[in-house]
Length: 117
Image 1 (spheres, rainbow, N blue to C red):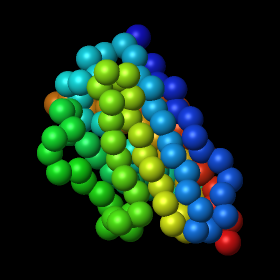
Image 2: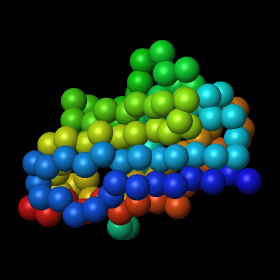
Image 3: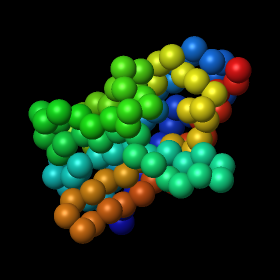
Image 4: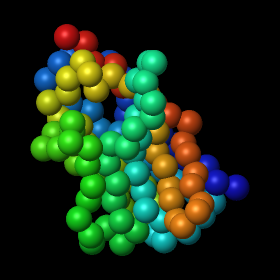
């Protein structure tokens, strides 16, 4: 059974930092591309960052977060992280952890990030 435990969300002032964590179970974590998506109220879910299965390839980031967010993973712990710095009010959203391999995709339950101005 695929399970995700996401943590680290919360309320932070503009310019602050948060670190999201996602612990996964129920699949071969090291074989999956891991990503963070987000969905703001009234908007579509969008890709924030992605990291390859082995973690060695160049990570992908949305233009809006480049230089501020960093994705990383620890395959020994079946975990993926998102370090978010210089947060802006427009970063406010529910952040979802996702695992992808071929046509398979799994989603976490989401964690709320709110950035106040």
